[in-house]
Image 1 (cartoon, one colour):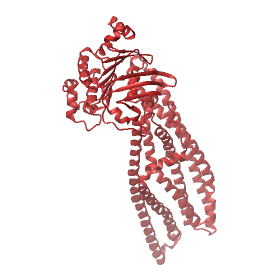
Image 2 (cartoon, rainbow, N blue to C red):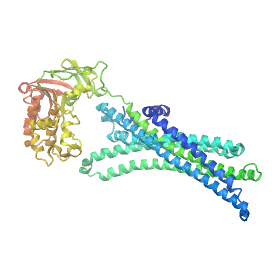
Image 3 (cartoon, helix red, strand yellow):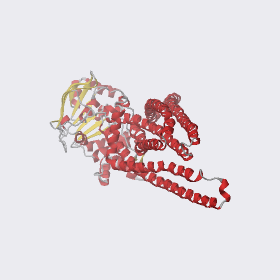
Length: 603
């Protein structure tokens, strides 16, 4: 898979819409209620121009100032005023009804929308946890963060307002057309001559904005990836003093996003005035032909006023539809990438007949194993060895020999192409991945600590591990001595990646973490590299305690750390070249002997 395969649209909009509606299905009754409220709101809003028309036709158009001096005229004027007040109160009542129902509808949709976005975000993050390590090696973290945050948020407004408001706009358009035709067919047909032009402009705008929004989401994703990568690597940037070069690269990425946003604003700035022009044109047609019809006695002045109000109401939803389509395009562009990520299939999955394993005795066997990260570039070539329960086996050799790869394969971060790997006589492909990994404790050279506190970094959200067990594990691996001296001890705040702690302290915390999870098999990958001598004494003592009674696999370049291993396996270019104890390998005077001699000659 290429770096950004999941960035590319994989489904047509119709299928994406179906998938988006699937998330709304559990909240269908909330949406039905919101639509029912919208229907009532539209009916009330469509009745408002009728009230205004009644005021004009029944009271205002009949009133003449020359009648003011007669008694009858005074009575008539008083009656007209009362009629105007009565209709005005009715109009205010409709405004109050629209306000209350609008608030209720907004609250219903907001609650449902937030639940939907919550569920989508949880599903994406859960899926990310299931994806294989190879996926994260190929895809920038910034892009993945964009999927979980920015892109899901882009869907929020679509669920909370757009879906129902599009229906509202359609209800208004249909209601306006029906009502206007009910008043006067000829005047309605004359007024609606602008509709074909509106349709053409709207289609062109929708088509252009669709492409633009796809590019905007892509550029946001690329920019987030760039920021994430270079903030994480800021130390390297400053070490090599390439701040200016990085700034110019960021400026370039930022400029790409700016240009796409300008395109979107340009498209909208053309559509809005065009829509307004059509509105004015429709009103001009109304005044020209409607004025003649009033003078001819065909229609009343009130009808012209009602038509003017309905024309405004007709163009309001068209304007809203354009804005809603804007949001829909943004949501569609985001959902294409979300579903692209969701459609990623993990390379490592449980088999149909995977068995649950509570614990391991600790025997490990590689049988004719071949493995490559890239096709036909073999990292391991026909590797076979066996580790008995409780043994400590070290893997040594030059960089790229395949030592760390063996450990990754045991944990099934990758699947092999040929051969078999067994634990306790069971093929690891037949063991549930979660059971396999929870029984293997792996400690790496580069310890990762999460933001939070020390307790949460040892427990890793596993609430079955008590505070007492955390302290006990820390004491056992010599971590308690420095933790107890901290101001807040086990509640001491940990910044991202534990930058406030030394490498040795981070390593001791990782030992406590590993012990707290009680693994049956232990994997150590350069666990004592880059540690000062004083701390190494503590770490070596902790390692001895951790390794006691456990099958342990060790990768180390420093041969002094593996001399007491039950067995040492020498790797060279993906193959096992030598196997035996420290003394046996020295007496053979092969690759191990040369490595040992080379290290101690330069010691």
